[in-house]
Length: 419
Image (cartoon, rainbow, N blue to C red):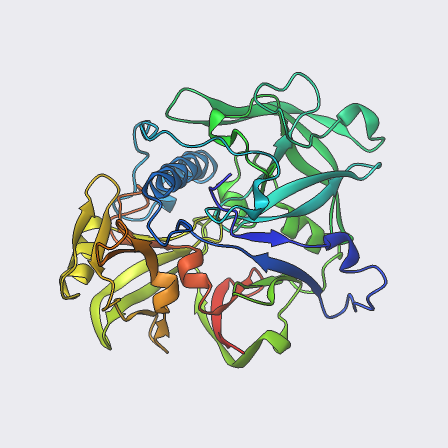
C-alpha cells in the first residue's frame, strides 16, 4: 500500500549471517529507497496524500488513547486531545496488488522479520511513531487475503496472552485480534517472549498493502499491548549491544542500524537533543522552522516519526511559514496542503538551538498540482493531529536530509550530516 512504502528492507536475514558483522558494534540493515507522493508524470498524488494524512491521524489518535490509559492525561502536551473519529477520505483509491512494491506512489519502510520456533516470515513497517508489533493471523482473519500470516499452532514457542489488541478506523473497520508471546527475530537479533498481536481483522485501509504489519520503535508508554517494544526487549536480553538505533534515509545506501550508529554514513558530531520523557513519543523541544535563512516560527515541540511520510504542524503556524514564501497559497484546506511556484521552492530548514538542518528542494516538493500549472505542493501540511497546539510531526521528508539517531540510553534524538 502507498501508506509508507518508500523504502524496502533487503536481506535482513543476511545482515548477520556470513558477513562478519560484529555484534559488539551493532547490526547494519540495508534499506532500498523508493519514491514519494509524486506520480510518474511529476504531479502531486492528491488522493494518496490525503489518505496518508488520514492514516497518520488515526495512528496518533490511538497513541493518545494508549498514553491516557498507560500514564494519564498528565503526559499530554498542552492542547493535545483525542479527536473524534476521523472520516475516511472520499477519494477513490486504486487497490494495490501484492507485487506492487515497485510502484512509484508508495512511501513506507518495510522489511522481513521472522516469528516463532519455525521462523515464519512476514514483512513489516519500521515505525518510530508507535510502540507495538502486530501481524496478520493465519486463522480466520478477515481482510488478510494476500498477506503473510502468523500461525501460533505451528510454533513451539508460542504462548497465548489474555486481552485483545484493537485500533479503530473512521470507516468502522478495525485492526484487532488476540495477543501472543513468541520469539521475534530481525537480522538474527532475537527477542524471546516478545508480546505482539496476531490480528484476526485487518482494516480495509490495508487492502493490497504489501506490508503485513507494523513494528513500533517508540517508548512503552504508547503501547496498546502494555508491553515492552521489540527493540527494548532485545536490548534487555543482551541481543543488542547499545540501547540506540539509527536511520539513514537517502536516494542510495539507506540503512537502519540496530545497537548504535554507523560512522561510515555520517560526518561530524551528532547534535543531540533531550526527549521529553514519560510521554512515549520521540519528542524534542525548542524547535524552529526557517525559510530563506530566517526563523519564521520558533519555540515548538517536534515528534520524529519514521512511520509518517511528510511533515505536519499546527495550521496557524504552518500558515505563518507559507506566508513567508512568495506566491504560496492554500491548495487543500481540508488536508492543509499549500502550493507555491515550482521555480521558487521554499528554502526550509529546522533547528533545535544548534545547526539549521535544511530540507532539500527535492524532499520538500511533492510535485505540480497539475501538469503545466507551474504550482507545486509542499511536503509540509498544516493539520491538527490532536498532538498539541505547539507540536509538529516530522516524517521522512525531514529524515531523508539527516542521519537520525534514537537513543533510549540517553533519551535523546540526534542528527548528523550525511556523507
